[in-house]
Length: 209
Image (cartoon, rainbow, N blue to C red; front, side, top):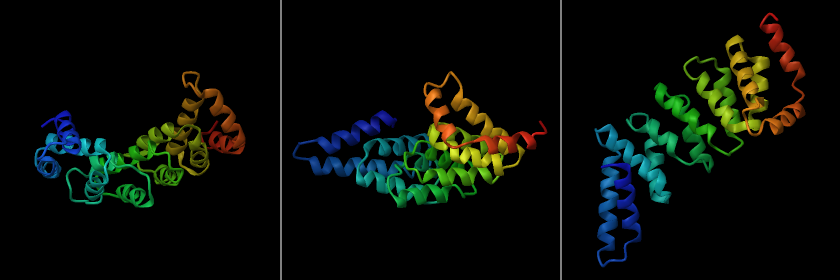
């Protein structure tokens, strides 16, 4: 069943006013909860995406269960789909950052990029500085999504990271300031407030300039 099919089915079940409303709802949830554990990857993914679009407490509970289960084959997709609106959900994503599965770690990093919660910046900083070449670019991508809010962690990475980390952080700063970025002027003003001179000097010395 496709994502559209799951979504229509669940929406209809939640809004139906027929005499069989209870049976329709029960059937819809039974199909979805079965599909999230399906051995067929496409069915599993469609069900998880449908649950993330449903935005109901029950759907969120199911997503959190999957995202918290290291053995679940749909964990990466669930981690990337859960909302990050409270400490419990943020802990789930933080735990996924340490998972042995690379896809799950990258999914958690991508989720941090879309979160408006300021506390995700400390988690991104951790990912940037641990010098993992398999996740560094994903962390930089999430830092870009955070915009000017990411300047503190990027400058810290320039000052404290090794050459690869410094290069990636400087590249991200350059992108945030580039003319192709709609908020470039505002980003520049934000960067100036952080007084980046010392950090950039350290970076230049480290690169042998």
